[in-house]
Every structure is written in C-alpha cells, then in structure tokens.
Amino acid sequence: MTDKRVYIGTSGWNYGMWVGVLYPEGLPSKDYLKFYSRQFSTVEVNSSFYHFPRDTTYKNWYSCVPEDSLFSVKAHRSITHIKRFCDINEEWERFVEGITNLKNKLGVVLFQFPASFKADDENLKRVENFLRDLQVKTKNIRLAFEFRHKSWDNKQIHKILTEHNAGWVIANSSKYPEIEKITSDFVYLRMHGPEEIFASEYSEEQLKNLATKIKKWRKKMDVFVYFNNDFYGYAVKNAMSLIRLLED
Image (tube, rainbow, N blue to C red; front, side):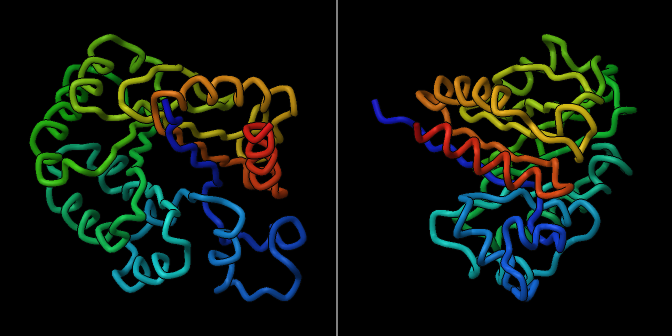
C-alpha cells in the first residue's frame, strides 16, 4: 500500500528574523514565499486570522509556489473569536470566497478557538450546526478544529467531528492541553513550542518521537505538520529536522 502524503512547514513565512536562518541576506521580502516553497511543501497562513486577504493576494500566493504545494489557512477571528460560530454565514462565505482562489493548492482550513470557548451545550450545537448546514456549500474543503479548553476532550465532539470528517488539531505546547485524537482522514498537528510558547525549540529526541508517530499515521492518512515556534527561526530548524528524520 502506498503511503499518503506528509506536508511539513511553518506557521507563516514573512519573518525578517529568518534572514540568515532560511532567507539569504538581501532577499526582498516579496520573494520570501517563493524561496520558502523551495524548502517546504506547505505553509499555514496566519494573516487571514486578522484580516480578509484580497483575491489578488491569494492569486499571487498561488502563483508563487510549485504545483504540488498546499496552503492551510486560519479562519478569520470574526468567525472563531468574535461571533464564536454564532450567525457566521456572511463571514464564512466571505472567507470561502477568498480561499477558493487557491484552487488545488488549498490544504486545510484551521479554526483556532480561544481558551475561553468551552464545550457547553450551546457551543457544541454551534459546531454541529456549522458542520451540518454551512459546510454543505463547501463540503470538499478539509476543516480542522483547534480547541484550547480541556472540556472539549469529550465523546460528543469527537463523534460530531468524525461524522463530518473534520479534523481534530493535535496541538503541542506547555500552555494548552495536548489531546491526541484522530477524527478524519487526515492528521493536523500544530507545534507551538515545548516550553515557552512560540519561542522554544524541540529537541532531536522529541522530533524523533514525532517522526515515529507520523510514519504510522501516513500509512493511512495525509499528515499536516506546522511548526509555530517562529521566534529565532526555531520553526524552520525543527521543520527541516523532521523532514530529514522522515527520510531516514
């Protein structure tokens, strides 16, 4: 049986602090994405959380990367943090209108919820209704949910996500609980940093343990891994190390 694809990259790419770590001196920032895509098969777009990128922006991103590259895109904060999945039809349609410009290079849509978003009856119903109703219009888009409150580790949400082939984000950090669940035909991991969030580096041993899990998962599922420990270029170093370990 042929293994599925493993996509490894970082959360974002437009970091001046990566000059000397990933980008050569003198490289214009407008060329960062094109250079980045020579090293990594995927990237997680975080800027879409703060604003709705223009169609021209998405089209430019599309043209900058190879044909087999994938973008995973974080949903706008109006959806997850402001309206918290309540009456989000307009925001969701606007978001989807933008990401469709990525066409075959769209990977996964990420919903990252605040830690204050708990798994009470109302919020469970909001997620279920979204997957049942709004997703009907966009059923070919892979979705992944990052819940940051421990109450979400329950059978009800696992069942809801599984029924709709929606992914459970396995998020590693010292700040939020790491819960390893598979609810879809793909695995989505976010590596925020083992100690200080965004600003700590994974050890070789930690990456070896992760590589062992990925080798098992990829026998049946596509795997997406994004390093979000962007400070000091740790994300770049760790992503490159993980790629090497999976090639061994």
